[in-house]
Length: 339
Image 1 (cartoon, rainbow, N blue to C red):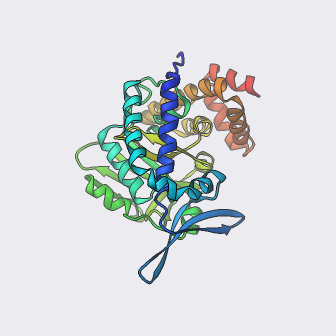
Image 2 (cartoon, rainbow, N blue to C red):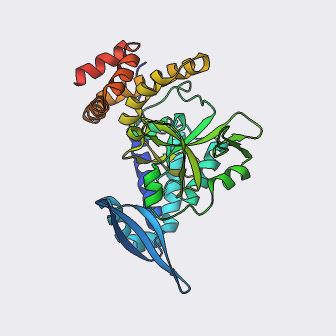
Image 3 (cartoon, helix red, strand yellow):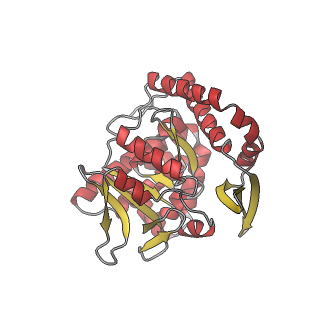
């Protein structure tokens, strides 16, 4: 399928809107920035006082970009009114340019999760809901069939990150979901809740976390939920990127890097077995093929690095990738050319 890019004006509008959302987040700094080091990594916190009690709120990993934004927090706070007007205007530009907006139900859920701190505290949107947001990151148009929802909205986070942060969401995701008419679905064995089903529909919301062997349910303390462990997920959600869901003036979320998403889909497709799972496997391969086509042209180094990283992780990884590529000769050729 030929790849069609958005206009330069649309791509610039998306990047500007993303930058303004990141500025908006930094402008919410209430106190001073505290730098905590754990296992050689720097984590930044907003340290402030409420009455006689000192509080701390996790801000993000201590990247140069975040540090620079936080240094400008006072100035950014003063620009709030004009910034929000510009954000609304840029969102209108994106709609006029044909960007696919997030539906109301998904948008309101993502917005509530963002306000509660799910993404700030390490939550990453995965699955087709994340795939749809690569329209902005890559500046390309998606076929509407590619974005047909499976009915699931999936979130993932590392268990160890959730433990080490020492912070929690401001509102429990389970409470948010019940407000939005989702009912908890307890596990059959241990009755732990890691997924919710829409009361009057087929949509499911699931929480996932990396597994390294046995795929059990694990707690995510920072997010206030449990999550189903899945092998290979650590590759997908390492080093995620910010992205915007086009709902109202945009919702700032976190998604996997596109090159990792593409390679991970090759692995996931081979794990699926049975009738319904086979149709999902075809969709997995279709999403992988499209992203690999785009990335091989626009970001070949990133794609090569992700592909070689996955191959280097062991024979089982190589077997699953090879099994999917045997059904995808054009995609296999692109990856061979990169290597």
